[in-house]
Length: 214
Image (cartoon, rainbow, N blue to C red; front, side, top):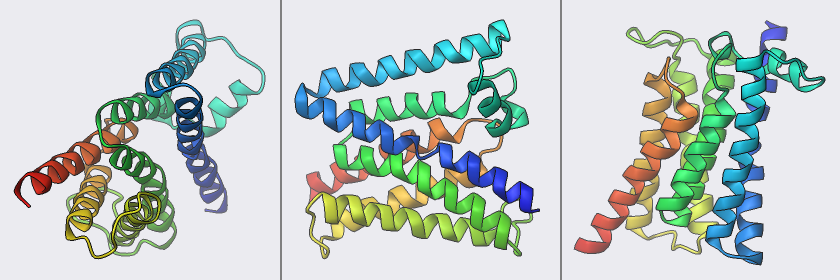
């Protein structure tokens, strides 16, 4: 059990890659512009795909990286693209299309919400869903709360929103519910791609509708 928890922590630590993505994006956007920033992220994606080509197609063992791949990858990722590639694709898409606050929230919900669900659910989970395998209510609730906190920080603290603005809270709630729902029901597809896209899209639609009608 200790080993499994340690391994899970290491895997989830890789999700902090999102901090690097946002850091690169904002630094590049500040020095150049948004389009250049997105091109740099695409370059990072291309480099990641080249490493995956060596791992999957060629079977090339690269010192240090081979150890990381072996230690951090799940069995389902053997011979398939790693989660970080899908995460990069999802991040580039949401940063390209959605409101920057929504894009940031979607990326960070994917990272920290997923971490909360996995770590709390596996460590403290006692009440499991009957229809979904290995999904504990403790993990689901933890993810939802973490996603709400992330939305609060991005929209209100960072985005200079008003704490009593009902529209902002509606967007945060919809995004948190979407991210939690997608994470809960997905098993075979990659949630690193699906969570930012679905939560970002739903958040953007809600924001547009509220701005049009209110």
